[in-house]
Length: 88
Image 1 (cartoon, one colour):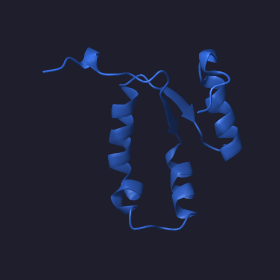
Image 2: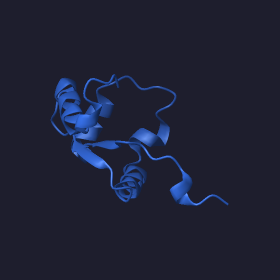
Image 3: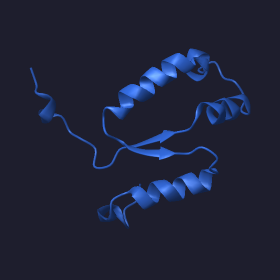
Image 4: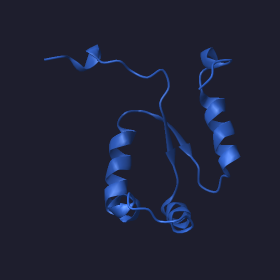
């Protein structure tokens, strides 16, 4: 069986997060799709997933109150300098 250290790791992994109020506001402002289901509405499940993701020591960007262009700027600011000039 392969050891976890044998797997490829990303150079930079970023988790976009928002507080519960912001998440609900965003979800309710967009059209519903057949793919939404519990994923968008089950706060307990989403909190469990968030807690699990945090254990991966990802770079977390709190997007609460941020416009899309501001989120993009913040993510790009956090990408290591070695990626400058590369297309993402």
